[in-house]
Image (cartoon, rainbow, N blue to C red):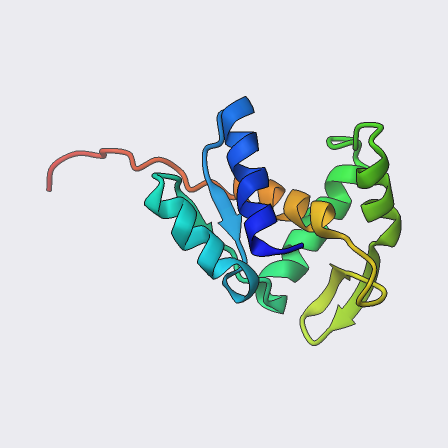
Length: 130
């Protein structure tokens, strides 16, 4: 998908929903994120390195197996899910595309969103004066 199409799709989603932030891989979406940041959107880098994607892939797998997360009946989501494979790397396994032409973008976005939701830092607590 071209960056301009992605930016327009994000803008449309922002019109319909309350979008807290955009998590993006700087390798592919840096320019789009810069443009959206200029418009006031919060953009957070999410490099898809093995160190980050392996634990996030495992968390997505657990969420599906434990039925905490289900995909709605949507043909594109079903296609992306069917295209998703497990690929082993130096740091474990991660979700991946079986070939260059197979699109899994919505599943990768789901993995990134789940990782952001499940890994919220604890709010700072005031313990007292020293």
